[in-house]
Length: 161
Length: 161
Length: 161
Image (cartoon, rainbow over all chains, first blue to last red; front, side, top):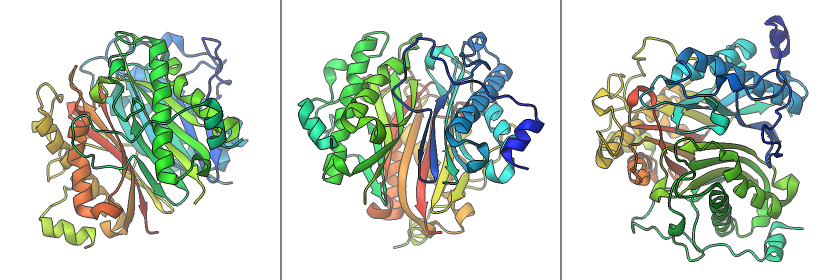
């Protein structure tokens, strides 16, 4: 089943384009396409209308639980799929996930970074399947992330030109 | 206008090769070229003569303001352009910026990482223009960076072989 | 001399596959191969039998010294070579190291991140030689890493298809 069909089957809705909370435009692209590669900027958890998921602000291990962190990571995946679809026209142009860098805004002493980033990886595998969706990954703890959000993920994917 | 011409027009001077403050040689390359890709190591803000920008040591949000952090990020871009020119012969061989990872040495509670890394992105766009200079980006907060400097950026660019 | 021959000459033994301390399977690949690229997930220091190097748990600059951190980084390199050999059949299929992201679990105030990650870089250069083993690199300080281990490294290499 194609990624677009599977997304429909799961009833998942991708968020609107990011609306900067500061009003400043950003001097980078959410997705940079070149040849058969799409380089995907660090994405944050977003509300369906394109705002940041402000209810989730906080550090994992303090204000945000590991389970809430994983849910935030799943929202990051949806935001990223929204950007990829806008850039590529269809998610079915993604032929392989390659690299995922999962960055967790972490409170001192919280070590289960993989559990948090699993929220991202599992959605990607669910939508793209075990072949296209397979990816390398790092799951690491950051000192701070933009807007105090709990997770940011960047990625690289292979695409059909 | 070519990147080299634009650099001249802006009157920008690129710093000399990095001089290790410890005197130790480094077991890595500042730029690793392979086929049509140049992988660029994490660069730090440098003085024109090749030393680290020791006047800028500190964490953004504490000793270093957001604006000083953005200026440091701009200096990182100049250092990186110096390395790229030495490796490639000319910056005009860069055909596309692809990926930028902007890492900020951050004090607890400082969240405006994008503002800091904008100092890097804006210089790249100014020199290479909106097509070649477009890049994906993450802007994240680190616990520590080498020499206590406030910003480190790594990147990947496409080059003409 | 080939990487496999050099490894034998050095008497180095690569660790067994990673055994998850939590018993959970991981929703990612240790090495993701596509065309002439292998994307290598963040690896941790491991014991020969495939467990995490639990004797090394701690932050560099506090429980773990810089020298122990460099030794941990060397163990990360061995773990990564184990994953690459399992995926590729032979390390001799690696034609070029490209990018290394060295992440150090750091105590406040510890700044000599390069010294720690040198433990990784030097082993790679020793096994693959100065041409194939050359790589770009960043060495940065993280707030936390999985299992409280002191170093995690991710990488990208070029391979013969």
